[in-house]
Image (cartoon, rainbow, N blue to C red; front, side, top):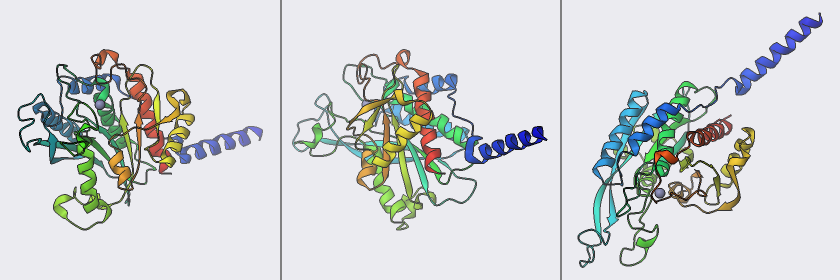
Amino acid sequence: MKKFVLLLVVLLVCFLWFFSGGSRSSFKLDYKLAKRDLGEFVKEPHSMGSKRQSRLADFVFNRLVADKLEARIQSFDAQVPIRKDQDGYGRAGNYKRTVKGYNVLGYLKMDKPSECIQMVGSHYDTKHIPGLRYVGANDSASSSALLFQLASHFKKNLGGLGCDLLFVWFDGEESVLDDWNTAERAPYGQQDNTYGSRYFVSQMKICGKTGAGKEQLCWREQLKKPIKELILIDMVGSQELKISLDRLSSDKMLERLKASAKNLGFDKYLDNTYTFVEDDHTPFRKAGIDAIDIIDFNNLDYWHKPGDEVKNISFRSIEIAGQIAVEMIENSQQ
Ligand SMILES: [Zn+2]
C-alpha cells in the first residue's frame, strides 16, 4: 500500500511538472551552427547602405526561409549625413545622402489563435570606422547569430506561449558619423542612429498600433496585432558576460530580467548598478511600447576597436543571453 501511495505521489509530481511548463526543453546553443552564422556576418564590414549589407539581408532572409519561418525584408530609404571623409561634405546644403536600409523579419505564428506579438530583435549592421576593417563579431554578429537559434528553438517549443513571435534584424543601428549624437548638432540637425528601428516603429504606428489599414505598409495581416513588447539583444559575446541594467528599458521588464536570471542561477551575469543605454529599443519606448535591451555595455575593450573578432567571442556567453531571453519570454506569457 505504501508503495502505491508513493507511486501516486510521483505520478502527481510528474503531472504537475509537465503542466507547469517544466516539460519545455531548455535553450541550448548549437555552437557549430552559431560559429558558422557568425562567420557569415564577420566576413566583411557591413554598414547600412553597403553592398555587403544588402547581401547579408538576403542571407538572413534565406536562413529564415530554410528554417520554415515566414520571412520578409522591409526595405527603406534612410537620409544619412555625409561624412567629412566622403565626397560632397561641406558643399552648400549638401550634408545628406540617401542609402537603402533593410530590416529582416521572421514571423512565427502560434499554433492557437493569438492577439499579440512578442518581438525579439538585434541589429545586424556594423559601425563604419575609417581606417579600420571593423567586422563586429560582438557588435552585432553575436546577437544576430543568436536570433536564428532562438527562432528555431521556439519553432520546436511553441506550447504555452500566448503571443506570436516576431524576430527582427534591424539595419542601421550604428551612427554614420563617428559619435552617436554628432548629427543632431548643426549642420546636420538630424538623428544619426537607429535608422531601421525608427523606420519599423513609424510603420507600426500606421499598421500595428492604430490598425488604420494601410495594407501596403503592413507586414501582411500580422502587424495589426498589438506588439506586447520587444526584447532586444546586443553585444552578448564577450568572455566575461556582464549584462547591463539599462534605465531606458521598461521597469517591469528589468524586474523580469532580474527574476529570470535568478531562476537560472545567472545573477552573476547581471550588473548590479544601473546605467543608460540608447539602442534599437529606444524608438519603441518612445512609441509607448515596452522594451528591454539585453546588452553587455561593460566589456568595451574591443567595442568599435580592433579585436572585435571571432577569436574574442565566447559562445557560452551568447548561450547564456539566449537562455535568459527564453526564460523572460516564457515567464511573460504564462
Ligand atoms: Zn555598435
